[in-house]
Image 1 (cartoon, rainbow, N blue to C red):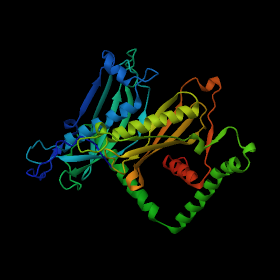
Image 2 (cartoon, helix red, strand yellow; image 1 turned 90 degrees about the vertical axis):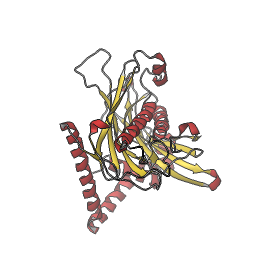
Image 3 (cartoon, rainbow, N blue to C red; image 1 turned 180 degrees about the vertical axis):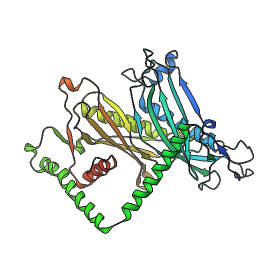
Image 4 (cartoon, helix red, strand yellow; image 1 turned 45 degrees about the horizontal axis):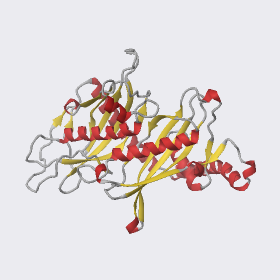
Length: 385
């Protein structure tokens, strides 16, 4: 898990824990920011990418920071004698880019709490931008993102209950109900996975068959390379990697590295991976669900490893390139390395390039471990029968 970095000042020994939970509305946590790209030259240059659009990685970092601020607002009881809770980023749900985000038009980011559990807080953020030509008929929503935070006692580090939520508008009630329904569905799936030896055997057989199909072409590359399909490429040949030592400037108020910083760096490596693979500028579509598993501290040696995990070429108008980025926290002194996060990004090809003869290759695994990773992702995306 990753500290959100907005948990307030360090608690003193005299401060007591909150004893009475409040009931708050989503409006009480709602926060919005306007990026004045149209008039602020300095701000515009900070966010401009080479194609005159917004740097998505930098924007992802901002969304994480805003979500942390909203979570803290909801947890606050406005009493200076109680110690503030720490809010920790637990996960980021699927982020979907609905249209390109321009860097010469003002941008609005707004979010609020949509659901709370005992110690968890769900936040939805919308990025909106009116089209440059002022077309009021088009949908202004450019990107949506859903964050989940958990609250911890700042003294004990244990999970802590958070203020309750009372949705007021029809839209707020709808979002609350949808989240409850997703919780029930996940619980039902867990129960189904526990059931039946027969179902388990059937699943294993189906998985073995799919693994064999995936590995068949990879074996041709290894055993008969002259006969390998020129329209395919081995997964291992799409890999990129970079590394960094985490600096104090990247930490939050609790000394941990921002989750948004990790998303930023992972996105930029994923974009580079897709760029090198496609041979043309890729267009970002979405980030899949991300769980923050391990904290990252100042001074940690962080390694990002990426690859094109698989491509989806069924739709010739919009081929999809699925890029996996794995963040490893490495401690050379201890000869130890463990996975902090795994990110999955989806890109497509920008319009018009396919008409110029651009062709996207099929990616094939050469090892069983690679084939299993592909199957896991395809199952998560609902692509396996």
